[in-house]
Image (cartoon, rainbow, N blue to C red):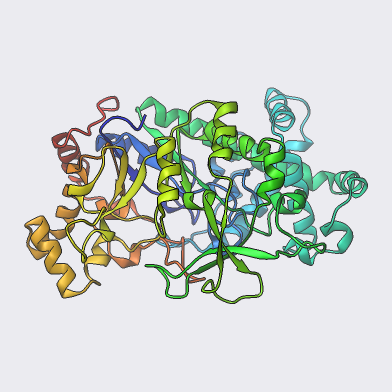
Length: 498
């Protein structure tokens, strides 16, 4: 799938338009697929679809497997009769996601829908629901985790009463009974998410568009994964992390990035053939056509920071499982189409691990200028087997970036592109499409020519991230035609949806 010249768009579904305060998997998502198909695109790349926890980040989720309830389209729930028409959505801002307000309103409606559905007699939909429950291995632990979390008023699991935080098998069975009604509602919410997502994926496929998903290497501490499988993580006897994950000082932060995720006990995972990871990859490829591994270098070596530290400056590199893990995954699942996020501090060992499996790495144009002609991110140094981005979700938009860089760097870009000041953004998009690389992914903000107000995330900051949404009014009338012309000019057109 990644070994042909093609192009795609990066946009998280929360950024879609719509009346409910957040993008969903409903009609606006289908319209977006039609729009990018009209541009000649072959891929839609999304961020993790998991339920966001800390800071509303999709990279810090209550589960590595569950779906984000806020993405559920309530209109489909109403159409099926689980909600009545009078459960109308409030009027939210069309340009930013107010996660607190949206969560409060939407989760209340989803709970109401779940209770109504579970009170029904047996129907074909009910049989479909029971099949989902029986065939989804992680579901019960997640539903129980969320049921207890709601009972404990949203507190992190390490703040729960000890008998709930450090659950024994006997207590697990007791809680499964005691919290039964809420567990049922949580399972209903997940069922609705995944049936809507799979329907949307089929719709994308009908236009010849493959969906690229995203798998973060680490999971959140406050997650069903860590709570239910404590033995797999580097925790002390009280369930507290010993060391946590992060990255040393880099382009994004002078003090590094202290993510705070618990670290894996790779030795223990290896004893059963990395079964947790095999199931995680199996599940991901049931949802997506291609998967991007976030922080790929962590599989070769990860930056361990003592849990007591306030920044990531003073950590150490510790070896990861490397090829042992991927050999185990591929032995069970066969060869998989994977993109390796190989940004940051990359060593020859990381490159060797990436190249051992012919994973395409990433080339970011915003990192290309300001050094010398041998910068690997410059288009003339690109490889066929790589994925070119103007920027990622962690970068400023290209228009915003162009307005923030030094005069010297700006001059080098003008000379490289052979472009005037008012042509630089178009020039950046053009050289990305011209690249010898098989795959190009363009953030939708760059196609809309939006500035820093449309930035998705600023690493190292806790507030104001992940909120951006576009409006259909942001699309210029001739946008699809102009983009399609360039995509076709550089041999990346997808004609299936035309």
